[in-house]
Image 1: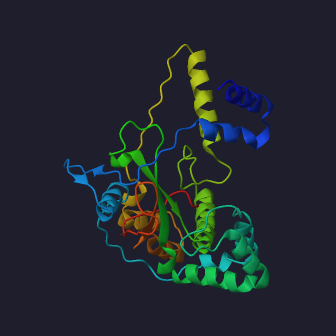
Image 2: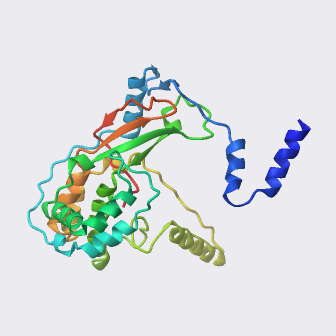
Image 3: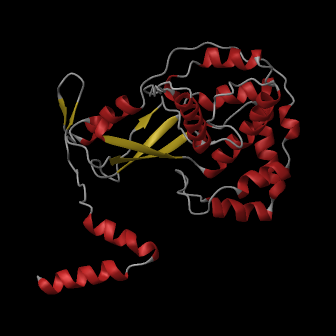
Length: 294
């Protein structure tokens, strides 16, 4: 035992760089929840693979609200889509990021870009002109993993679903988001207090504003308070009718509105089941909108 302890202490003293994470991995208990039953809202327990998959789908991807919206024709936003814009957005994709269901990584798409950049540009441009997001790009690969440190792993919310989309789908999404963001910035269509999904704004900026206002309040002898609200399944429950009308009011081009509604319609997630679910089994939900891609 003494020899093992001395070896461990010597490793900790001499460790450098990324090797420090090896120590973290050694000291962090592994969570193995294969076959773990999940408790439904009515108190019953889901035991089988299919039952557990359905419980996770219902909890993380609930059905969205009904909608009815007639998109207008026309729109000229697609005219601004060129190889320079698409290429710059593609270059921002990390080669090390996990690919989607088609297993084509960003590195492979970049090689294809070097071969025929005009083909990819025309594809992205045509999707925006038609206001159409291809259905084959709407299926996300979802990996179910347990959250560390939870007291009860029979609860469905002790797990999270990490979604991965195809690189070409994310490229189209980022290309469409670019003119939308530019238009809203010119028209001042977003609240000045919004930091998410805005250029040159980040969570760090939001924290800096909060700290500044807190210090100003303290300087005046007042008490500062902050209210943090986490709305459950916000993106999954976006009202497409209201969103489409609101984009019209803000003067967004019709082709971008059509693409947005198409992008949000009939989305799916296919589970790659780990920990509590078999890797070779799949489950599909049609009520998901994946977050964090733009």
